[in-house]
Length: 305
Image (tube, rainbow, N blue to C red; front, side, top):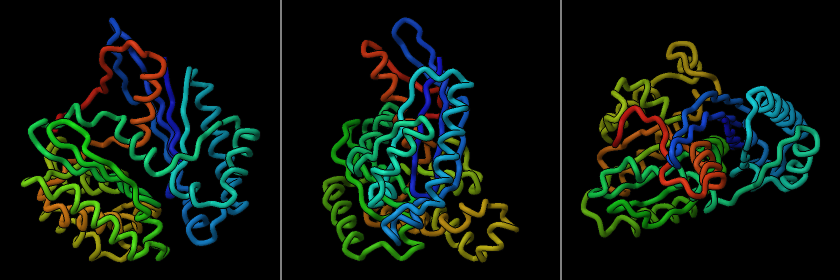
């Protein structure tokens, strides 16, 4: 059977279709298809507080395509969530209704705390060394979700309106940066050694460019060197010389700055990149809903951290 997860983000919309396998109440899943469309809803939402008619039409076309793919793949259940851009758009509720009526996709606009909890639902703690303390950082276009784990237990999580599109549009506030810094300091002060975990498309791309093996962390020094390397190229050359997609070439710089800043505040010298995110968490939630008696849920992983 197949489940689908849809993430309507500030930079892009994503569809993940996963194969679900049940063996003796043990559930596993494997990513079958992942599609990403760079709509940049955040440009409208953060500057104008509205999703423009042009972007709404693009969203409707994308959701209709996702609906058709889900039908062709015979997806049995799905869940769709919209995050920071739709949270701020004053016409968000109208867009939700139009997508439901015209594209056949029902989705919820989730608040920042709920978004952090869904990301946490990917159960990253299963792959952690329970003796360590981790700062989990998920950087998106409109917000950054942070969680602290220690001894295999979630200590606290939160969401802040600091994101790559927001920074490019100069819509990140000093007050929000201060709130984020205070949260990091408060929630990591009692731990001697902090390890970072980074998720999101930008850190995945940075990790790929770095050439590190899966399961090997990026050191703070290596991440800073990667940032300096990427920033030494103009936007045009990041596209033409480095081969980055246009919608990745600009946001990768502020994303790097967010990761480096949070690692510095927490004193984290290493960052693991497990390649999970909101859509992975959604798949876990769907499995938990449909298999309440499942004794375990796992994804085929390349390496543990």
